[in-house]
Structures are given as C-alpha cells and as structure tokens.
Length: 507
Image 1 (cartoon, rainbow, N blue to C red):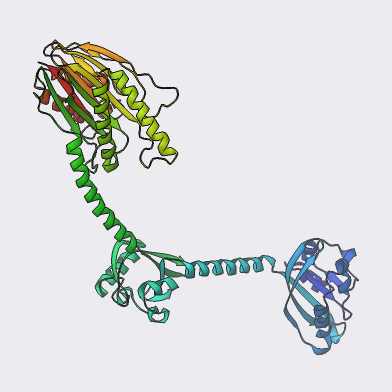
Image 2 (image 1 turned 90 degrees about the horizontal axis):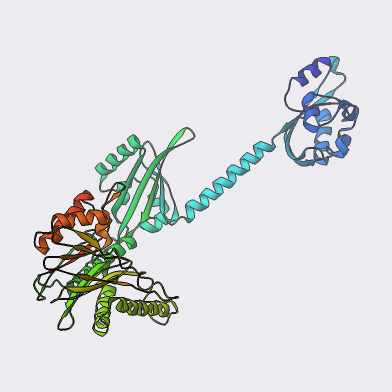
C-alpha cells in the first residue's frame, strides 16, 4: 500500500484509491490540492459522499461497481460538474482494478484528469473555425486557397464561383491560369516563383474573362503563410469592374469640365492690352499651383467704368476647378455692377459682403440651391487714369505695394474681413488714398506669391517688395513675370498655391 501511495504522490493528476465498496482508502497530494480538501475530509469516506456529494454521479458510480466483478476498466469517462470549491470543471476519469498479494484486498485506482482548459481551447478553436468559415463564405471578395507546392486550388469561397461562373467542383484542382486569372501557364509560373521568393504579389488591374465571355477587372493580392507545418497560399480577388467604369466616367467628365472651365477662364480672366487705358499701363500675371487644376482659385479683373476711372481687382476664392470658375465669374459680374453704382471701394466691398452673406444664409436654409461657405479675399483699387489719384480697399488680402520710381516702397494698409463670412455685426471695410506719379507702379498680389515657401522661410511682403524694386525699370510685363519667377525660384520651383499679380503704372 505504501508503494502505491508513493507512486500516487508523484503523479500530477488527482488520484484516489478505493476499496471494493467505493470507500476512499487514500488520495494523493494532487487530489487534495485540486479539490481543496484534506485527508480527514476524504479518507474512509464513500466516494458519493465526498465534498457534500460532488462525486455522487450515478453513471460514474454504476461504471465503477462493474469494474471488480467484470474486470472491466473504465477509460476516459468525461464529466462536467460544478464543484463547490473550484467551480465548474471538465474532468476525464480513468479507473483500474488492482489486486494485492494472492489476489486479495482488491482496490480500485481512480485517476482524474482536469481537461477544462483543453476543452475551452478546443471550443475556442471550433468557434474560430466557424467564424472563419462564415467570413470565408460570406465575403464579397473572391478567396482562393492554393497548394503551396503545385499552386493548385484547394478551396474557393462562394463569391469566387459567382465571379468566375465556375462551380466549386470545377475550380478545385485548377491552376490560376486555367481559370483566366493569369495570362497563361508561363505567367502563372512566374507569379508562383515571385510569390515563393517574396511571400506576396499584387496586381491592381487584371483583366478577367469569366464564363460567358463576360469581361471584368479585378484586383489580385496573394500571400503565402505558415499554417502549422504547412505553407498555404491565399489569393484575394476583388471585382473592381464598377470602380473602373466609374473612373472612366469621371475621367470623361473631368475632360469635359476642363474644356468648360477653360472657356470660362478665358472669359473670366480676360487680359487687356497693356495700353488699353490712356494714362495708365496695366498688366496681369497668373500661375496655378498645380498642372492638374482646371482653374485656380485666384482671379483678376481690370476695366474702365466711366470716362475717367479704371477698376483693378485681384482676388482669391476657396478651391479650384469648375465650381470655382463659375463662382468667380458670378463675382466678377456682380462686382462690376456694384463698381458702376458706387465709386468708393470700401462701400463696394460692403455691398459685396452683404450680397454674399445673404446668399450663404439662403443656401444654408435650403432656399437657394447655390451658395455655401466660399469666403472671398479681394483687393479693389479705383484709379483716375488722368491724375493718378487712387483709392484702395481690401478684404483679408495683403496690402498693395506702391513702388516709386526711386525705389521707395509703401504698403497701402487697408483692412477688412473676407467677404461672405461675417454676417453679424456687419463688417466695416476701410480704404486708403494714394497718388501715382509718372513711373510709379502699384502691385496687387494674392498670397500665393507672398507665401512662396522654402523650408520654414516665406517670401513675405519684404521679399515681394525687393523683387518689385529690383525689376521696376522694366516693362510691366517683364516686371510681373520677373516677380513671379523670383517667387518660384525662392520656393525651388514649387508654389503651393495659385499666384496672381495685377500691376498698374502711371504713364
């Protein structure tokens, strides 16, 4: 008996020694530790009475009583029970009959294995496999699993059969080129070789001919990964046919919009001759920040509106493209109407602000279909072309620069909020008077010029003034182009915003 007990204490699983009446003779240390019991609570107790009857399991008792007379072992009897001190556990019970010397004093050795964690792990794996299977079958991307040695399809999800028009049985055992995913057998081998070397391949635009010659465009991504001791290849195939058709449609619309915008730009940004206004020379220079922009957000206008005055406008609206072109065209004609009604720039800007604010208000209420949050920055100068007397007012723009023939510069510091965003209280726009002497030049610029950037450095008003002074003796066209070139050079060839210059010189 001592020999049995010594062996039992070396076993990590709980162990009980029972007599022929299923009374506990002894238990090992693992039993006491697992079930939080003591020898006094266990020994000489009926198995069915242990732990307030926690082992009183009729089926187990019945099987144990058959061991002695029938010499039949008990193998892997599984129980799931809520034990008082340790909670619900899953146990695996094995029992054997043991005889002493002379086949006397028969005993039953009962070994109890706690398989709770194993069961939980198995359940987690089962849940994970079920979840994966559901995802696999419900995915709206085609999924193929390939044998890593030969590249043959071992599994395909339902969407893959829908995409290609093949049945599941027809796909299994095929290679990719055989179902039209790759051009031919040679291309398939090359892709397979690349996949094994890099572990990943991707084709963004892959033409695919499914059953019935239906043409599709797919995005193909394949990875190779380890699954246990086996390498598995997974291919994800996304149908991008509709996206490609939409992209083609957008490209056509983009081309159409570009043509419309170009026509609008020619109308909106009409370039007058430099000597169009007697007594004054006028020049505009313009550059978009991106070659992709249909029309930039900067705009200008120059026109005579009575027998003696010329209006010069330099502005900037949010955004680019056709919508900005339409908006700035509307601004141009509205502004021309107000300029003909009021000669004072500050009053004209106030009228423009009221008009745009009201348009935005009605748009936000759903009354107008046009409007929205498009604040406008603008400089407006009115000049008497004979005397050179002028007045300027600005809405959130850099103050125009006055460049004297001797190189002295002056910033015309008018001030005002952007147009169309300050509704209550009403904005007040200020104006500054100035005098152009013969040879003096007024330079109006958008922030695309002054915010030309190199690293953390900006060209700024000082940089603009230096360029203007440096090139003041050339023609207005040469001067404007030299200023813009200087800004581009300062930014190392990359202006981040549209740039517009309006220059006027007294003759």
